[in-house]
View 1 (tube, rainbow, N blue to C red):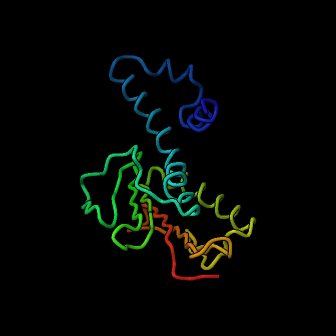
View 2 (spheres, rainbow, N blue to C red):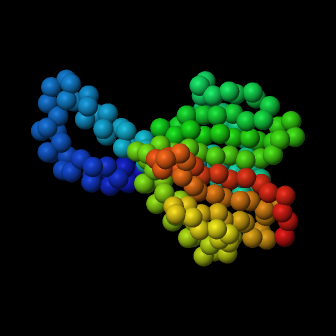
Length: 179
C-alpha cells in the first residue's frame, strides 16, 4: 500500500528530495502536506465506492456503513437513504428499508473525476470480459452495464456526467428484470 501510494503521488510531486527542499517554513510545509494528503485521498474514491456500494450490491448484502457518519448537509430521512461524504465525493445508499428499492451512487468532484473515470472504465472492461455484465449503452463519457444471468434481480451500473461536465456519478441499482 505504501508503494502504491507513492506511485500515485510521485507524478504530482516529482522527486521527494526536491519537494522537501521546496517545503520550507511553516506555511509552505502545511501546503505541501495538504497536497500530499489530498492526492492520496482522491485516489481512494473508486476503492470506497467498490467496497461500500458495488461489491455489496453484487453480493446482495448492501447495508449502511457503520464506519462513516452521515453527511449533515443532505436530508437524511433514515427510511429510504443515507448520504455520506468521503474524500471529496458524496455517497448515497438506499438499503431497501421501508420497502424502498436498493441502490447506491457516488458523486465524484472534478479533482478526482479523471482517476475515478479511469478506474471505473477498467472495471467495466474487466466485468464485460468476464461476461458478468453486458454493455447496454455507451455514453461519452460513461456507460450503462447490466448484469447477466449470475444475479437476480439484475443490476444496472451507470457512469455519467453531472451538471456542466465537472462531476461524475456512478450508480448501481437493482432492476425489476430477471434472467
